[in-house]
Figure: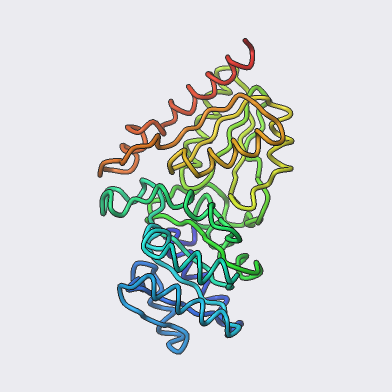
Length: 316
């Protein structure tokens, strides 16, 4: 059983635990204290909680100022509000100046769709933040990995973007499995007919697809790409050299996210047949998360079909 209720709670728990021994840590809230499940932090450390109201640009500017004084501020709110409303501030006052600001983004992908709809489904955020120089981008697979990533990010000098979700995230890892920054992790290695690279909170679908393929005699290697930037070029290349065919799986647009990052890595290091499973240049509707993922081509069957496609290309 998981020790957290979701990725937001995992973030808050990690921040509280670290703050008990590190007085540099701050939380800057653009009216997001409850959304980030950080009320307990504010109660325990009121002098380290700053509320700016619904003003994401101000939140990042305040965080940059705190970081310039040697503090380590965390800004937590909806991912689109950080990367879109406050994009200029993130770029110019945090990334350009290499400020030690940690950005925790919730509602990444379609998993937030049922509750708040398209205005709060963020499937462009990784493409935006990946394009800004100097920002580390982390996409953990479940709540325990978020917990580990939040703790790990304090040791990463400079701005960090960690993608969280809405609280519906399937548990993938045993909670005792540590988060490892900068490295892919092989979850299944049935064989080398193809590789599946997945990131984020639909890892359970990638696992299920790999298992079904194995039962059909198609042997794949499944890897969790939890650090999107800097991406693990060496680890990915080793898998590509063995498999010579790959599929990416993400709850994000295939433009700018994992699919793009893997294509860039492969083209420069080991070109292979590649298929990308994710949103294909569309605005998704509102609806229940699992139904949305299936409707927009990010279902288990879609992953299986993509693998069969690249395997057939490799063999032709």
